Image 1 (cartoon, one colour):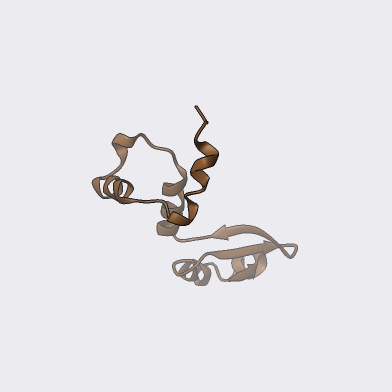
Image 2: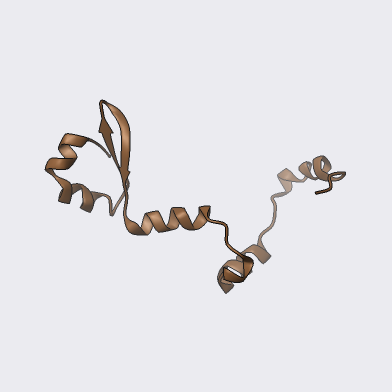
Length: 86
């Protein structure tokens, strides 16, 4: 959903409620300026973007990582890395 900054200012509560369902883009001079989103969505986005020590990962996340596999269609990429050393 997109709204102008003026419309947002006049109906803050309405757009706060709407942001619980999906981010609300607030425009200024017809360009995206600010995005209003729920705290839950913000936390989800930030959780995936912040590097943390492995000790801070929960058991479910560690198990998901251990079970993960690369799709066979990407197997040729291994050749690109076979001689690489960090």
